[in-house]
Image (cartoon, rainbow, N blue to C red; front, side, top):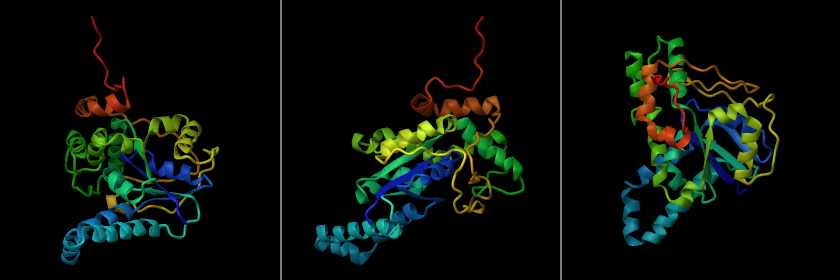
Length: 281
């Protein structure tokens, strides 16, 4: 069955697990909720075949035919991943989709991405709070030995868990308009404050029938493995929506985040600042 493909992507600790639960309520949507290996597998296929000598020789002989073989094979792989789904829309969750949106559209031109956002101080705060509950476990990228400021600084570098999707977000403005129109930006704070209205707007954007979600009765999907990230980025599911507590961020760290990521606040949180401003005389 042909289905419309939707990816969930964006920042960590920004509500992607909850969003998957909410989307799964809709009768037209298939959403397994777990982080998916589909995008990274497609990236691996591209890397491998781009160095395959026999395929390269076929490109020399008849480029259109050889490239057509690759295109149809990768399209088939994407569709085949969800071959047993009977619903008209499939949702696949991976932070890798944000950096691969143009590849995705080459394989599934109807595809759309939902990009999860959150105020960056609270993203950092969520990670740090979890680390303080598991201080005897190191991060995958060995951040436990750093002080809090150093750890915050490291998390926002381009190759790390927060910094990598941030770099992809910063590059969204470089995409053609037709691609940007395939992106839906969803702020965690808005989803927490008014989940019914947010999901109603999202369903309309996705082009599926209106549906009233039940924030008090969320489906619980299969649990996700958290040991891969050493229990620092938990994917807990709950049967109901409840707003998380605000994390207290040290002023020096919050100020550094807002300064280093000023473009993010200007684009997605205009007028926001959690840093106390000095009183004028």
